[in-house]
Structure formats: structure tokens, C-alpha cells
Amino acid sequence: MWGIIATWRMAAEGVGKAAEILKNGGDAGDAIETAVKEVEDFPYYKSVGYGGLPNEEMEVELDAAYMDGDTLDIGAVAAIRDFANPVSIARRLSKEKVNNLLVGEGAEKFAHKEGFERKNMLTDRAKIHYRNRVKEITAQEIKPYAGHDTVGMVCLDEKGKMTSATSTSGLFMKKKGRVGDSPISGSGFYVDSKVGGASATGLGEDVMKGCVSYEIVRLMRDGLHPQEACEKAVAMFDRELKERRGQAGDMSLIAMNNKGEWGVATNIEGFSFAVATENQEPIVYLTKCVDGKCIHEPASQEWLDDYMRTRMAPLEEK
Image (cartoon, rainbow, N blue to C red; front, side):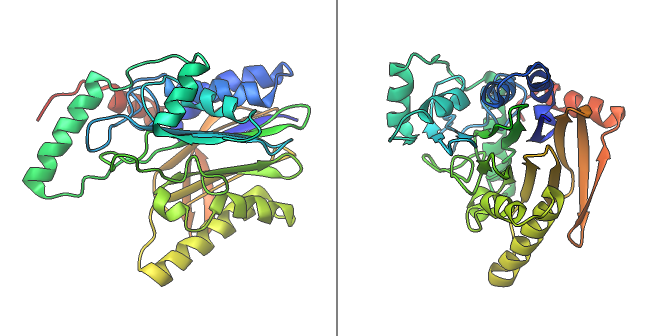
């Protein structure tokens, strides 16, 4: 059995490429890296990789992570600038005995030494988004933060190996050096080939408060189906945050167990995800959760067309 699941519609093309690798007996590490790189390289997705939205100083700082569920090896980078595929750097770091999480200049020095591709990740399109947001903040006194659509994935290959990976440019207009949950083990991602894996997208500051990805894997270890585990973990932590803090940030989790069964839960409207398994061609679903129970419906062609049209529409400065 093989399978891969990923947050957001933006992962669909990558999931399709990963499915080809997996159905031909390929490695879960290669498949998930290929899938994440597909998202990182597409300039019209505003929250991952090339074209990702900048921090308040108009710099693109990227976070990424990779985990091997067989060995529990982890690699991660945070606040790294000017490198094309942070997920690949994270995977390379997972092979080191120590120094598995590198940030900022240290991550950049490692990437340069290892021969990874340098690239200016700030696109003209992202500059327009930035300048428009600055004007909106001034004119309307709105909060600057927007957009935290991390791509997170869990993958299973025919040998039973599982992997998880994340990549994001983080909050739009974030403080320089800000790091969310995406490169943090147990929060943004976690995988154990003996059980399964999970990955998160949403407001990192809140996801980190509950180590929600690890909690989902723990619940699966206790025997829960991935769907039950996602629903229970997300509903419980959403409720906990609201009781203690009065509100809960956006939080959406995906999971897959070592049988290729999957689950998704969210506390927002309009969450999408992509999945492919041995028994399921790559497909995009939309999820709606009410009172802790979630329904997944295939995205219509109209919705899919509108998604791409909206993201690729020409931009003008306001």
C-alpha cells in the first residue's frame, strides 16, 4: 500500500508527481521531496517558496522540515533566505547526527557549503502584494498579518516507510526572524512508520501551543483511525484555546497511518487538501467540520478553475 496527503489545493500537482514515484515502487523520501519542491517552485502560491510573501522588511524568509519515520531522523531550516528549495536543505540536514535545525545565517552557510541553489526568492508579484498591504495598513488600520498556508505532507511507500515534510514563507509581514510551527517537530509535523504521520497548517503561534501533529500520531498509536484522531485533537485543542485565551487561531491538520488510511480536520471554513493512494487517483477535497465531525467533498471543476484563475490574475498596485 502507498499514499500521500497534503494541505491545500496548491499541493495537487506535487501530489500527482509523488503518486507516479510511489506507484512505481519509489521511496517515500524522494516522493515527498518532489511533491514539496513542486509547490516551492511555483511563483503564484503566495505562502511557500518562490513568490512567497515577505516579512515586514520585504525579505522572504523560509521555513521547512523533513522527517523520516523509519529512523525518526529530522532536519529543519528556519528564516533562511535566498535558497530555492528549503525542503531539500532540510532533508539533507536530517542525515546529520547533530545540527539538525539551523536558522538564518547558519542555515544559509550550510546550504551554500552543500551546493544548494542560490536564488532571489522575492518576486515582482510579491513586491506588489507587499506595497499594497503597506498602503492598506496605513489607510484602513488593518492588522498586517495575513496568509499562513503552509504546505505540509505525509507519505507512505510500498515498503512501509513513511515521511513528513513542510515548507512555508510564514505569516505575511511577520517580524524578521519570526518562526512558526512548520519547522518544529511535533507541532508542524511528526511521523513514525510504526504508526503514521501528521502535518499542520494555520497560525503557528497557536499550533505550537498544543504540539497537535504529535498528538494526532499518539492517538493513532492508541488505535484511532486517522480521521478520528484528527477530529479529536483539533476539536479538543480548539476548545482548550478558546477556554483559556478566548479565541483560537486557524488550525488544519492532515494525517495518514501506515495502512494508507487518512484523515483531516480543521477549525476554519474553506480548507482544501490533496490526496492520492493506491486505490485513489490524485484528488482535491474541500472539508467542512461542524461540532467536531468533518465531511470531505471533492472540489468541483468550477472551484478548481476559479482557484487558479484567482491566484494567477494580474496584479496592480493600489
